[in-house]
Image 1 (cartoon, rainbow, N blue to C red):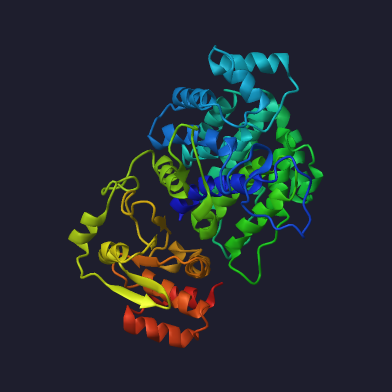
Image 2 (cartoon, helix red, strand yellow):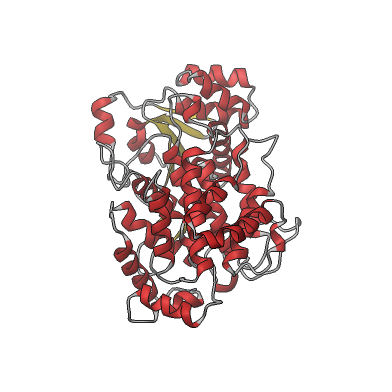
Length: 478
């Protein structure tokens, strides 16, 4: 579950960024406005494209994912490469630092001395990956967060905000309760106060306390790091967990609320997304968002998608070390599955969607499957474009390892309906089609109006009967 939460830090932040991009610098939004990844905005982003917030976060994430124990030099190189690529949007403090030929920390420190009131949100928006660098070591996270902020934003408020947010993300990944239990979102931030200078703790405690009970729209100057911090926290705290849907839907609702603040919408939502993802995990990010969210680290680099973010985040959280099979990042796991889980290809049509095992992947693609949804670990090159490939983190172990199972299955069924209506031919599989794939097929049948008992029996006859916790998740949807 911690690995899923670590991935959620980056994936949910990027989704918040892309969700808010089309509304940046606009007014606060009423309930009559449908917030979605529409693109456009001040810099004409493509629908689902993330902005400089995530572009810079990736420059931090990449060396951490490589296992670099002192990532600061590589982060500086990444920032400069990004700036040299002529990005669409560059914040004022960031531009001043990166336009200076001196080491960034020197340039930013001089800028802070000349402009002591400069306190933009440009370092807080990108700080999420810092929390993955030293799991369970808040002092090390605090030190790195301060140093990374000070590459471009060296004033006290900027540095403090990054330290508090980064340390709180790590604590949330490790200590937040299960989905069914209430969570004190501000608690880890208050606990993190010990990592900033004592003279500034009372001020930050007041800011945190104010945000926990506030409407996020009252923090109107959210280009300022303090109001961005408070607006993000207020968006999270003022959004109730749903009673009639899986608890993790809170992630979507809180990001929606963050965007409705107006102003620097992409940044407030990106900041909120990093903390939300630390609690709910990447499995709480809807597949509809995963399908469209994308971006570039620099504008001359290949487009990166949700799967790339998740791969890098998992590696970062594990110190850059893949597992024995080389996952994540290995091009293919097919040989591993053939060796350890041999079986004949199994491919079953269920109401316009095909379900099966990993051994049927080639057959499915050869017969026009153009969207593959994998419910097991897969390599990075298993499915070639233009076919879509999405890997969802369902584990066939127990309910505790799958706090978002009901949401994941219900959301998958909803997305399958969209795909079929768009004329796609989806293929859904896991390794052996014994648990995860049958659970997805049950959820799909129920979404098509088949009764729960009939759906279970029909799938059991065609594929297999999944474990009881997966049956429950498929049937209840909550």
